[in-house]
Image (cartoon, rainbow, N blue to C red; front, side, top):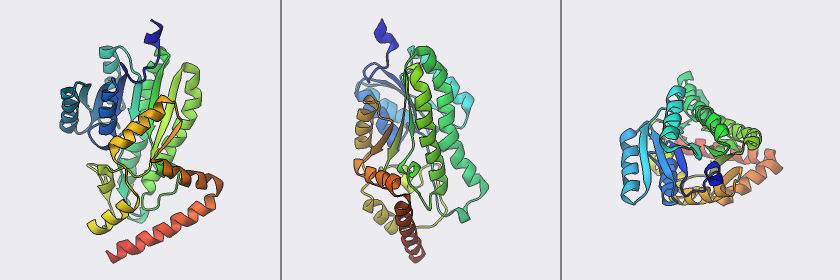
Length: 284
C-alpha cells in the first residue's frame, strides 16, 4: 500500500504532457509510454494529438489525447482533475507547451508580447496551479517545466521567448525548494537546439524578421540540433535522478558555466552573434 503513495518512475505512472502533439511534447509522450506510463497528450491541435496517442496505443502503450489551451486556467484545472478522477493519481505534470516569436523587439506589437507571455509563462503557471494542490494532497508528484537555454543565456532576436524562459527557470528553482516539504519534485528542462517545429516558427508562433530558407538551414545546422526522441530519453533519465536543471545536449553546459563565471564574456559573445545574424539577414 505504501507504494501507492510514492512517485512512480515510470512504470505505472500517470503523466499529463501539454504541447503533446509535436516536438518535445510528442517525444516525451512516446518515451513515457514505452517506459510504462499512462500519458495524456494535451494540445490545441487535437487531431494531431489523437494521431500520436493512437500510434502509442498501437504499439501497446497507454495514451489519450485532450484538446487544451494552456492559457485557460479553468480548462487546465478541469483536465488535471478529470485525469486524477479517471486514473486515481497524477505522477507527472509536464508544462511543455510553448511558442516563439522571432525578430527584433523593434518589430513587435503588444499583442506579440501577450501571445508569448500567455503561453510560455502563464501556461506554465496554470499547469503548476492546477496540479500542485493535488500533488500536495497525494504527498508525491513531479512538476516538470520546459524552459530553454534561452532561460539561462541572452537571446537577441528572441527577447520575448528568453523573457518567459528565464521566468520559468526562476519559478522552477524557487518552487522546488517549497515543494520538497510536501514530497513533490520540481525540475526545469533547458534544451539547447532540438529539431522541432518551433525552430521554423511552429503552428502558433511567428517570424517578424524575414529570413531565407538557406540561411535558416545554415544557422540551424551550425547549432547541431538534437533529435526530439534522443532529448526525451536523456531528459527522462535525468528526471529519474531528480535533477533540478536539465541541460541537453550536455555540451550546452559549457555556455551555462561560462555565463556564471563570466557574464560579461557571454554578453560579448552574444552581441557578436547578434551582429553576425543582423548582417546575414540583411543580405538575405
